[in-house]
Length: 116
Image (tube, rainbow, N blue to C red; front, side):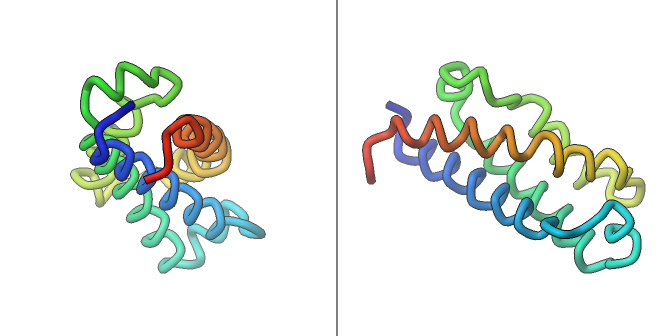
């Protein structure tokens, strides 16, 4: 069982990933170009997911190889440090293709954790 801090961070990842998926429901890729607030919100949510992933202990990360830890953390770093050159096509692909899978994997991990 991961330490409580890891469980909290996994829950943060799940919550913010769910929020991002909810924000894009009914949206198209073009909405990222036309709705600045939507784009900013999604980038920020992805940054938070990456920061939470970075704070999950190495032991917990090793126990859950279904989560692409390095890629999530790298995306966070890219969004933070390359804020002026975010490729919205790549972001959209991550939001629509990868986040639903991340959510499923996090739900599976957290469902095996005792409540607390």
